[in-house]
Image 1 (tube, rainbow, N blue to C red):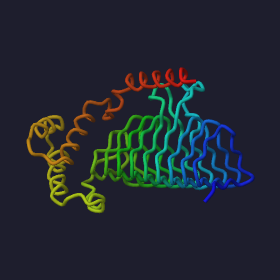
Image 2: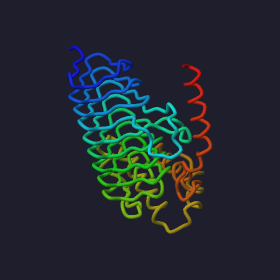
Image 3: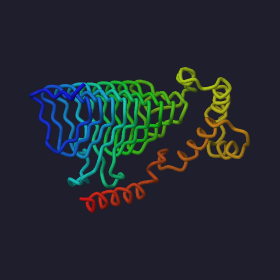
Image 4: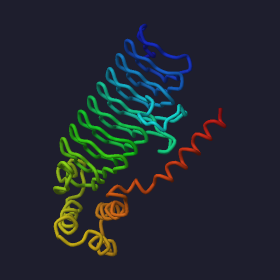
Length: 284
């Protein structure tokens, strides 16, 4: 099937379109945009900036991808937005491209679902199989690891990390990192338990889930000082991979400013952003 572009769509001649792309009425595609094979762009979608989309994405109407970051530090630099394959991005979703101080790139992995009106700010990194419910709000520099599920109206503070397989309840306010494999809910957020249903749905072994339940009680319900518990558990042999990842993630969180590990990486992000922009300028 050939590429289909509605006659009312505005496609810059510099844009690169793959095979079998469809672009709907009144869509606008900028000059530095790349759209992968079989991707569907709905009506009134705007794709701008240095933005690349992989194959088989579905962008429903009125989404805005690659817009300038809502950050006073941004001065028009050629920062980027990268989107993988097989994502569904629903109505009125906004994803901003990066800033130099944040590494220069906002990224979305593959096979994600971003529901209506969710917002992904500059320099966020979303891995594969992430779900954002309606009206989810991610501030800048947030990392969402694979298979995390954020329910409607939840919000993450700048530099938060939402761990893999975390389930975030509706309207939750995340000021700290959300640990992997856990249910997080509240205003402000609290760890409520292990995300057993999410883990079972994805085929995680029963023995790994039981081990996570055991360590959940030790870390979050024992009443002992968190750092001491994590130091003890970190030295234990024969841990499963999920438990090891949980402990490592929690130890990084304890290192972070106000419970956000990525706060410690600000200088590293800036170095990466400066290097990326310099490379881009030299390539031109």
